[in-house]
Image (tube, rainbow, N blue to C red):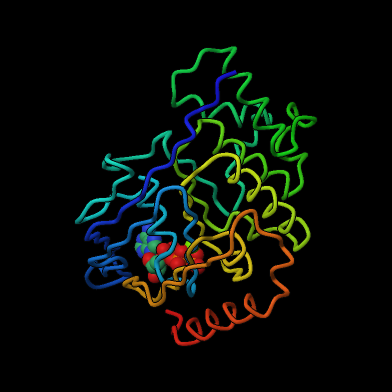
Amino acid sequence: MTAPAETADAITFDRVEKRFPGARGPARPVVLDFNLVCAAGETTALVGPSGCGKTTLLNLAAGLLTPDKGTITIGPRAINGPGPDRGVVFQHYALFPWLSVRRNCEFGLAMVRTERRRRRELVERYLAMVGLAPFAEALPKALSGGMKQRCALARALVVGPRALLLDEPFGALDAITRRHLQRELMAILARERKTVLLITHDLDEAILLAHRVLVLHGPPVRVARDIAIPYPFPRNPELRDTPAFAATRAELWRELDHAAPS
Ligand SMILES: Nc1ncnc2c1ncn2[C@@H]1O[C@H](COP(=O)(O)OP(=O)(O)OP(=O)(O)O)[C@@H](O)[C@H]1O
Ligand SMILES: [Mg+2]
C-alpha cells in the first residue's frame, strides 16, 4: 500500500485582517495586520486567554473563514476554502452521529478522488493507528470522549494532509485520556511529518508537543511571546518533571498573567 502524501508545507499569514460585526456599533478587528509563518513539519502551539483570537486564526487557516484583507498560504498555494491538504480537529467531537466510526473516517476521503478499495485500506490503517479498529462499525454515541477524539484525528489524517489544525483537541478529555492521546499524537507526528497548529489551554501539552509556543494577546490578536522548545523528538512525558520544563512553564504563565482577558 502506498502511503498518502507525507510532506509538510509552511502555513503563512501575510498581513491578515478579519473583522466581526459588533453587537452594536462597527465591526471590530479580531485579526489586524497579522503576520506569522508556521514552519513546515513543525508544531506551533497557540496559547492565550479566552477570546484573544486563536480559533479565528485556525479557522482562517482551515479556510472556514475568509480574511477581509491579506492572504494565508500553505506552501505555495493560497487558502481559499477547506481542502484535503489540511486536516482539522475541533474540541467538541465534530462527528456525524448517524455514521459509523468507519464512515465518519471515510467522509474525509469524499473530498479527494480515491478508489474504493484504496479508501478502505486507508481507513483501516488510520483506525488501527488510533486504536479504533475494533470499533469501526460503532456509532459515535457508543464511544467515550477519548475514542471520539481518536476518530476525529483518524478522519483528519486519512486524507494525508500536509497540515493538521487542532483546536483544543484534547480539551474536553480527562487528564489520563489526554496524556494517552498526547503520546499517540507525538508518535503519529514522528512517523508522518506534518505542519501542526495546536491551540491548547494546557501549557504542559504545548511545551511537550510543540517546537514553538506562541503566547497570543488580543483582540486584535498579536504574538506577545514566541518561545522555541528545543527538546528533541520523540519527547518523554517525564520531561514535565525537569527544572528546565518548569522554567518554561513559569515563563509562559508570566506572559499569560499579563494578558487581560477580553
Ligand atoms: N462569528 C463571530 N461573530 C462575531 N464575533 C466573533 C465570531 N467569532 C469570534 N468572534 C469574536 O472574536 C474574538 C475571538 O474569538 P475566538 O473564538 O477566536 O477566541 P479564542 O481565542 O479561540 O477563545 P477561546 O480560548 O475561548 O476559544 C472574540 O471576541 C469573539 O467574540
Ligand atoms: Mg477558541
